[in-house]
Length: 431
Image (tube, rainbow, N blue to C red; front, top):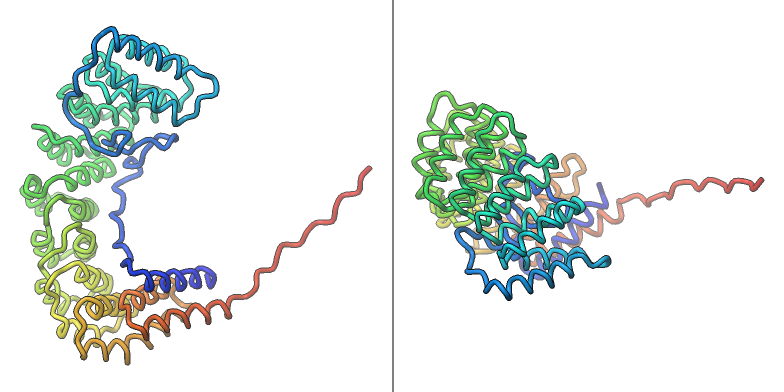
């Protein structure tokens, strides 16, 4: 643990010198189904090989003669015995892009005898071609015995973005006997497709599917869409009396990835009677891509909030808001009793010192916050608080805070016991 904190202190010192602010926490995954099932480093759901979401028809195929010649050349390249995985993928994508009968035939032939990695590459690569033949191949692969290949087929269909692809993924999502992981992947894939009817399909699935893990994936698929499209759904869903606390939390967390600014909507939920929902609101407000403008509302709630976990998240939320009243915040932080919430509050003060320094803030941070954070960073009782204290010192970028981080690193290094190597067994006698 001491070694890890030495590393944290050193990292914080480097960050302080070079400037980047510690990243906000990432949105927690809805379920394990949101993870890429492939083992070959292929793109995530909805992404092509160059990382761009593609929907709709591909560009026109080349003339038949040139397409057949290219297909033959690429097929020969693909069958070379020592071809690297990178070149295999390039050849597969190039074949799929030609979208000719010869190219599709070559891919089918390689797929039939290919190793699992090659089969996954081909299933995903077929997304480069939106011909009916390619679509039919991908739809048939949704039922492949290898779930990772079916997952690659989902990604291929998302790339195609055709009505047939949407229909196939919608059917899979609502198939009660299909793999829950694939159903969740289908939901996340549909969330990437900006086509008519997709939002209605996802909204209906959120209300009708009974598996909470799948519904959680559906909610995250909806949450990542444009908030102007999804606000009415979330308004109804989050105020429905028959929705469980866990799913309400998942719905709130999903809004952290919304396109647009859901901050005002989230702030209205920050007074919810369920503390778990309030915690989720604070986290989502801290993680939205756009900086919010609800600081006054969050501060007012913070002044009456009694749950320490909620208070911690509200402090974090205020780091992602414009127009924070530094004087009011400073008064709240000075009266904070919970150790973890206090560290989060001091981290907020550090950001205010960095962005909008005033003599009052700088004096408080130098005289009170830095010694308190240094003490917390050296206290072995709570590892999370120790790391958070080091990051708070880093965030302020004050010279005294920089010196404190360096001193913390030195003291932690000196207090870390030397690592004793394990005993080496004596060599066995040769018979």
